[in-house]
Image: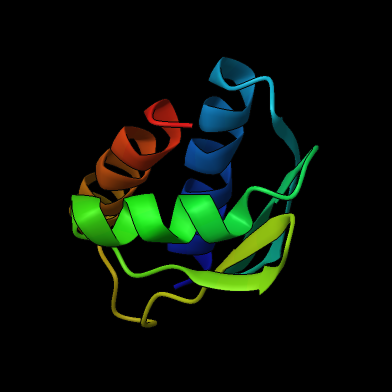
Length: 90
């Protein structure tokens, strides 16, 4: 699970490098968050639902990820592919 936490954060940082409105990636282990530079979390959650990923909007400008401890790299890749689809609609 520890390796998957590092993998998840690395993949989220890749997204941060491609989307200017992502202002921070935070996390420890598999508990991670994306912070935005404006209050778009509700829109990201809605777009995520349409793309097939459930997201937790914890603040108007942040979403949280809490995958199960048994998550695989392939599952992280699939989920973040769906997240990217959601972010492209912003």
